[in-house]
Length: 137
Image (cartoon, rainbow, N blue to C red; front, side, top):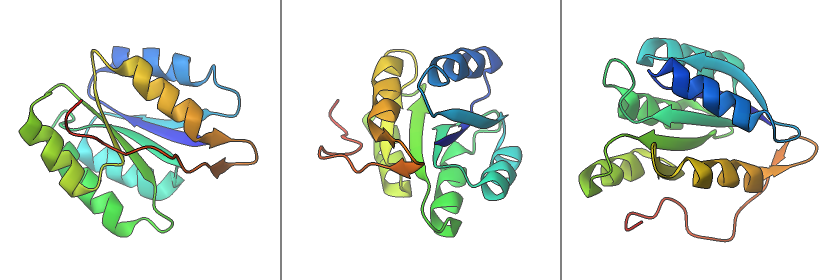
């Protein structure tokens, strides 16, 4: 399973990459920090999952989310990490097409477990039997 990480914080990306690559079969195939680089990388590498900060360095993370959800066939799973835990931000991410939304600082363990649950051998993504991107958490 391939993953692209998109977050302005290089230290966060590095820590996250190390944790993700401990999961057998998971490979981080790219990292970026702004919307233009992120969009190009996703369209070029076609990852199974994108872990995307809702703001990025240039504040356009949600725009990247909308753009990728319109263009990617088959659809890429988009996991949003956010520094803004407000209901308005989570609603905006959900309406833009986020598959999962996690608070960056407090829910990183939930995000890692979600990736682990999505992975099945032979490069296929597993469907989950629980609600996606709940707003009340």
